[in-house]
Length: 429
Image (cartoon, rainbow, N blue to C red; front, side):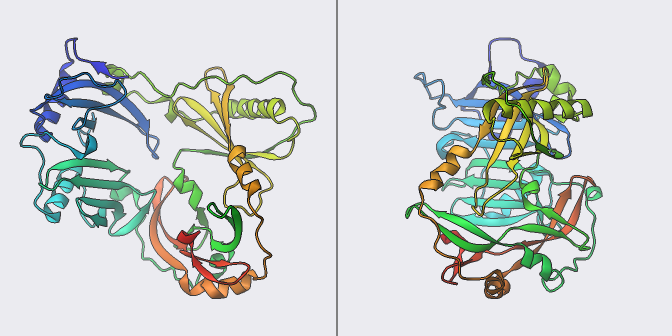
């Protein structure tokens, strides 16, 4: 996975190595290995990073190949922006000499601003503070963002940096549609009430299911013209909506043979420094869409011959060198966890090579005691909860408009027991 020392180092790589050593004070370390990685962000842009593993000089004995010694510095840097995505010292132990140290919260915030090029309270804000840790989240002029970027900083009792990570998209002003926030819960009460669902929550310790009313999160556009489902933003892949029911008249007798998936790419320095576009950034053509539908249907005809009409192909997206087909059962029950499947397709030969089905996990709940009788109506539950509904402004990335739009996020941290009418915190479920 990693490239070892021993060959003449590319000058561009050497420059990054020297910069990293200087930045984090790694004078008591040696570079054990390095490698290149690439990923595709929500804007469909390919980014390249170089990962490095720095071992402390004082580690004399060989270590397990799969384990890094305590104090190892695992560092990842964007090779084009030369901004660090992460710097983690294993087990929170550092041997850095004249490395990064802090004397208080304000100094940490200033350091993060300097390292990321972001402005505090305008592009990131403090989310949580704990002993030896500060956690920040992405924002736009103090308004939360979805999907959210995160910045975490950890330090030891002497104020020495032990962990830093920065992940997110942090858009430019040009990508944000700024407007006055005008939403209120009164204006969107019908939508809020519609989001109240009767669900069956698994109580694992008691091995039973509890029926309760709870709010399904959703984003409502500031102009109230439409909504954006919460699950689309959580799964930030550039997906292609399909929504096609899969039906057949005859099954296939041949056996489907799973193939081991290769998740890791061998990325060369030339690919990285040239900024070569990742295959994951390529659009899925109409011809590929049509073939994927056939491929997925044929897999079902082999593995689930009696499931004609049960599955819907929801979407396609590229990830880690494969086309992923996301399926959901067309009839869902009230349980929190719903039946779904992911079929991985080799894009070079357009054949299914593996799949994941969550049926085994769901079957576990068949052993649970069924919920008690539901006696509380949705209207009754809503009256109990409406004073606890939350509407929070968010800038949400719209994949169709390719910009961030102002929305209100409907949420509620409480639910109503559908048998007793008791209001309970969802964290208790």
